[in-house]
Image 1 (cartoon, rainbow, N blue to C red):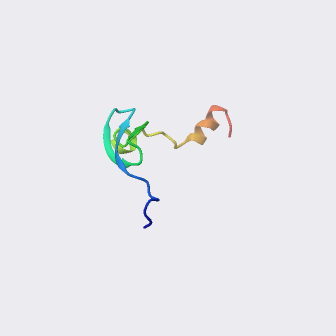
Image 2: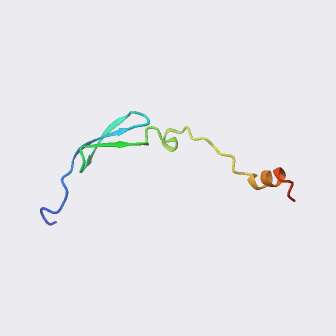
Amino acid sequence: MKKGIHPNYVPCKVTCVTSGKEFEVLSTKPELRIDISSFCHPFYTGSDKVVDTAGRVEKFKQKYNMK
């Protein structure tokens, strides 16, 4: 590897704005603020809301009296 062309990595404090949780990673910036993380994302927390997608066409047809 060539010397002098790679960025310097420093410990970075990452703060999730939504949950307020903080964790540390290596980055080129000393601090990051993110909107969503694995602490509050529904996929990772298991609090996923199920959206009913079955029967949408039938509901549309029934609503507008289509056959």
